[in-house]
Length: 61
Image 1 (cartoon, one colour):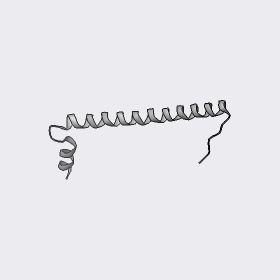
Image 2 (cartoon, helix red, strand yellow; image 1 turned 120 degrees about the vertical axis):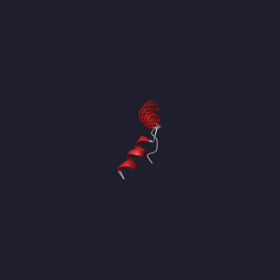
Image 3 (cartoon, helix red, strand yellow; image 1 turned 45 degrees about the vertical axis):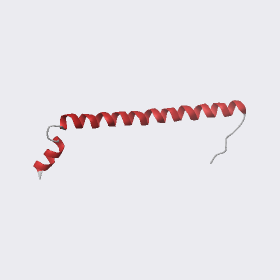
Image 4 (spheres, one colour; image 1 turned 90 degrees about the vertical axis):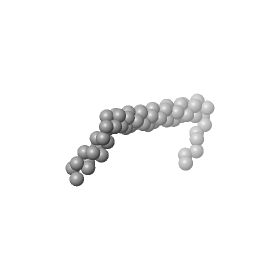
């Protein structure tokens, strides 16, 4: 059973290429989530600033 697990994790000769690729993909996806959340925060702050300048309030849903 241990031999099967090692075989799966090493992916024969391709493990040296596959695992770093998975790691890179994870880093890119996490980075996209972080950037998206920051952009959302900036957009909300900008919307609040515009609403305060115009004296309008958006409907709270």
